[in-house]
Image (cartoon, rainbow, N blue to C red; front, side, top):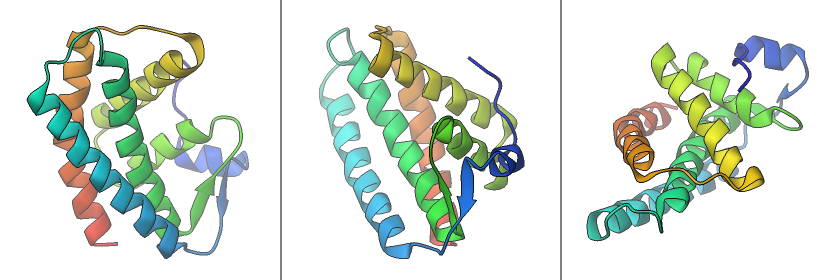
Length: 149
């Protein structure tokens, strides 16, 4: 896993670009994340995290968080595209005021989600539980940031 660059470095490399604020798209992402978050909570509360749902839970947690980060970027007039776009989006957490430890964990989650999606990596239930705990901790912070946007 390569180290995360600063948001400014991704901007200077052209991975992040300025654009007009896109409130309708941001609202859509926020609404979809809310639905996904509720659905994930229901799954976790009614079924044990095990070898049959670990990877899907990890991917869902990642997607919920990244969509909320992307929504904030859209509100603020930024868009990431191309190679390393997901890294660039994670780096926006620095701008949003998240702690370095939270940003680092999200970058790790991004790496593992890609390992699942593109390389067929199977992760264990213990890691999925850590990811769910991270989502439960960070989701209210993201909601608060987006309410004040």
